[in-house]
Length: 309
Ligand SMILES: [Zn+2]
Image (cartoon, rainbow, N blue to C red):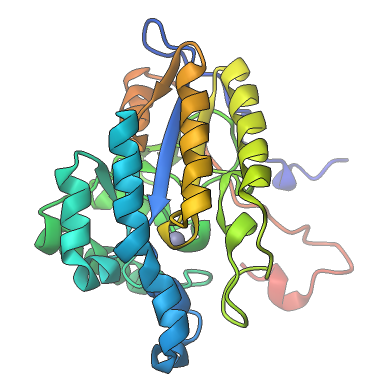
């Protein structure tokens, strides 16, 4: 007999319908991690001038370059900003908002949320909200977890705080309504590791990344193939870039070429994650869940400790 306790109640994601004339959507997103992504992994790096300068390149050089590029192309993007970045580079974050882009929540200190308890995660969310409000007068609609690490209790914390969407999960090509414990619903605009520049470019010995520096042509090829395939599916292309990585000159030029290719695709809606989330929620689709797996209680490899919920 199959163990029905183990059966996932998740339903496969369904395609969404888009506004008239639209075939698929594309979101350019920029995570302004700056120093926080390194400091959270190794706080002693605060004394290392060179790695800190590598991270500050993002807000100081990458963001202005990317803002210019987006303006030339006439497209809006979503910037996910840790509260610590807002406090450290307030004029940069205000410039992003003043240019008409969406600012969304990306933790306070790019904290490692794996195993983080509810109370600590709630405090982190509130600190990040306060920072974005104090610095830029922004109450964000959206959230992206640091390193895309959601806990099963995170969606309820987001819903309690009035967030409308998350963009950290990976179980769909299409955006969808995510059911939250307590009967609330968030929009989920999914991500995928293949559409993240970290895996292509992150190199900072001993601190971040797999230690590779790929050619921007390779990244452009990968992202173009995924863009074209998602466009054919009528899905959403969500690219995640970090200004300290993609803000470098030849990488920014590759991103510009990608945007030209996006603009050439018929019926591709290039917009913010917030717009895609709001559209998704307007469709009245049945919410999906992302149920936590359970361990078989009688398997020889499950320890007594793991059997206790
Ligand atoms: Zn990040």
